[in-house]
Image 1 (cartoon, rainbow, N blue to C red):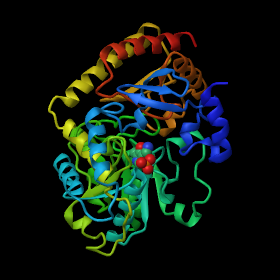
Image 2: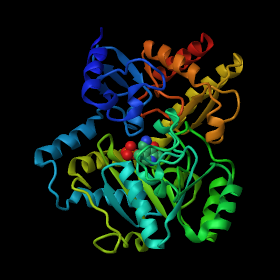
Image 3: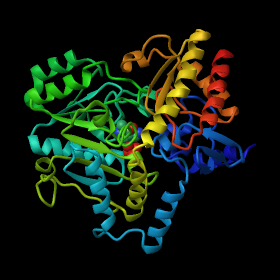
Image 4: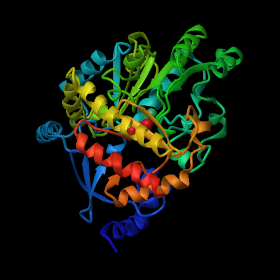
Length: 425
Ligand code: PMP
């Protein structure tokens, strides 16, 4: 028995399912999760010493790769000065400035400790400002595990086929409308009948939690126009896309400004952090300035902000995204040509450095079409790649991530192995 198996056995006696976040348990693909001992650059090593080229990258935060030298230095330097004070710090001001500079739609920002918290707080703010209680999300959109958002959610919830989590009061779930992504008519119909009760529309501008899905031409523009017309607050959940697709996230890439933006992941360079921000007028409804309460013992934590500052400073290099995206694009082009040459029943959705290989021959444009994928085949593929030393998302309905330290040679090799694996399934 390997060390991962032993640890997993013990973990299951101590932690529900042996994990602290469900998708880590490999339930969607079967088998025993690898327990990880260390990460360096684009690689991770499990507790049995096996090395993997990592495409999960902590589910998105590690755009600079594992244990980036500057991030590690910033973290250790800060740790020596103290780990938390419960009082304001210069780091928070610096990070807020960096966020504001990256996102023109953000005049003020509040730091929290996770994406879930960012979204939960942004929704409360939208409800508090508008004095309306209903919210709208997209089918298959995942926004963390706050009660109101566990309705037709993606990510781990999609994996387990749970429409709603137990424990979410029905009265609360009833306040959440869920509509298909990429369907502006559905949004318009909903607004026509219900906008007077709707505080906000929250969406991942580029969904990545049903696997990566791209907006149809004009969709995001239409969403912006409709939310304006019907006076509904538009929240972009850029927890994945923020600092990932561009410094200013999907908003920069598509030239659209949200009213409120939720951030996380890359923002903390691998440490726990989240943020939400928007126009000053909206944000000043938050306590202590305004009547919407929101707080956190570890919010704006000095170590997390130090890691965030070190990360964002690197991303400001004008060539950063050019290099990351062109390296990623060459990898996708190779896969595209293999898919064509061998008529593989695969749909490769990608944008910048995130991608999903759907085991489906039809285009994937929303949650319904994503669910056409053959998740069983995906599981076989996943385990063959894992055995070959490539660690991809342990579920069909997730994004994979490329970092700046994935070398072209690593990606070439991985591309060949991915193609070979699919051909031999
Ligand atoms: N929003 C999106 C788009 C996410 O992908 C996630 C996490 N995968 C969250 C919110 C929740 O973030 P966290 O896990 O940090 O609470």
